[in-house]
Length: 495
Image (cartoon, rainbow, N blue to C red; front, side, top):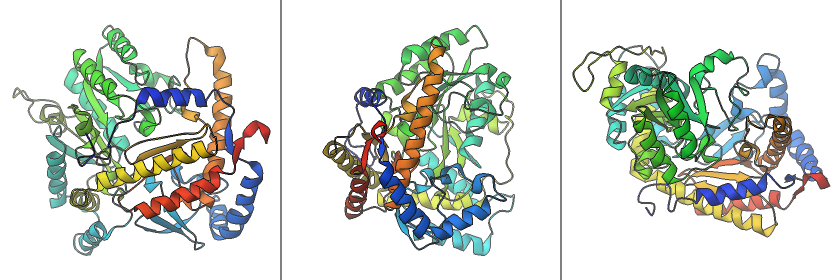
């Protein structure tokens, strides 16, 4: 499938990328050299971002950590943004940056675009942000999604992707009369108790979920990414302990494809889920309307029972979450009838600020604009140009870094922090792995600070989202800025 409206021209070789990442974590850590990092901190952050630094110090007195969102935690301190426009962000000190964070992925058409912004302003001037009663945009958004994504016969808007993942688990248990949830190790399906399991690094089980009692995970388990044998093993064992209600998948791999999976794996996971009577749940919070108008499922040619939406579904506006799927599954959200005409129970689901007029209006016009401008393909072409340029510069400076992309979801991995895995048959290795991931996490933060000082806002220094607001000239300027940082990198042990 050569683009054809999708963000991907040619899907990556997941095995080849995995091999590169395997090699990366065997090598010494490479990062920004200390003298250059110190220079960036002193001459950019301390001198050119003084207002941000002062505001964050003040905010720390009343906000834990000084910011309200995990994405905003950056080394050496968070930057305070006051304006977003197209592909650029502007801070309170007057500095501007290329936006490769995109609020974690939602702004695929660009930030604060008039085609959506103007419609939201008109809505606010009449209806207001929320009434608690039905608004026409709830219907218009649901209808638009069902037209774009073939598997979505019905849709329910919620407040976040986390809520949608929670809701899907309840639907799955009611529909299948089974207990267990299986998720891909390292994948993120929100921060609800039972799904905050096996996050970031496969095999961590509940280690990353401080504050969640271990008994909550009684019916949650993880399988290794890209490993159909491991998935089937877990499905087989679950037959003797309540069965499997749902198999959750991040379509391009855990953490938005940080550990990529193959097309064959996705098709095989769908087959296995249905073989064992489980619902196949596609978490398209990131990939939905970014990989293509029909989501990643349209690209891969699969038909999930339920799909999780977030981020782009509200176009960067608050209240971005929802679950859609086959009519016989979605009936459990309306106390309706299943496909056989049998009355079904209603899954517990709520949210005062779910499906507000603002979120539904913004989502509807964003999807219209994605279709009108062919935004997925445009953003994907920019992602390909960015990734190719990064690969050339990695080679130029003889760095062990790995750059790859799935359309407009791009990765520049200098440390392989999330490529480690914990084998519970070799627990003596865990302290060493935790030490390594700690060191590598710190160097991700350091190199991310260097990118920021060169005018590049990234996600954790390793993930980069392109949007349709970028031009080839912008991407070339972005690459020149990355080049300046990569030229200042070397092995950590030599510093």
